[in-house]
Length: 153
Image 1 (cartoon, one colour):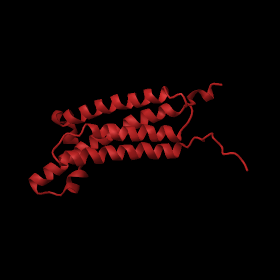
Image 2 (cartoon, helix red, strand yellow; image 1 turned 90 degrees about the horizontal axis):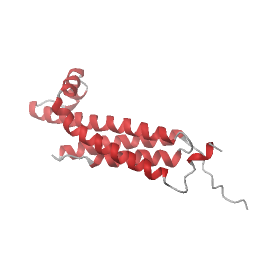
Image 3 (cartoon, one colour; image 1 turned 90 degrees about the vertical axis):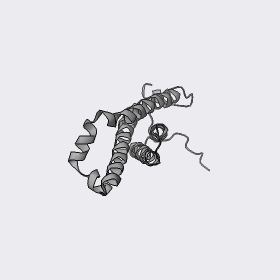
Image 4 (cartoon, one colour; image 1 turned 180 degrees about the vertical axis):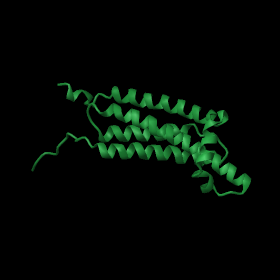
């Protein structure tokens, strides 16, 4: 009977799926908690953790730093889009419009993104997400079972 192979191959596609999935979780949690009337800064921490840990699980070697960059960028976009969706829901309810009318209106997107008050909570969420992302990456670097340097040999 053959022994089990202990070395796991790198799978960039599955890592990318986890990065995108984490960003979608960030957007959904941010929007859902905001609709309940609360600020959901921790939603970005949950999403970026899913992104980075999922990416690092499937991708081995030197390209693991790309997971941090992709995770941070896509989760920041998830936070901003979650805040925009919440703003669309608030405006739609106030003026009796459907959320989809506002969501795909280029003018409303431009107007929302140029308002300084729009960026208050997403900026806090992005700052928390960056802190958690670098803490997750730091923990990944200190993992004694990790073989990040296998390409250097």
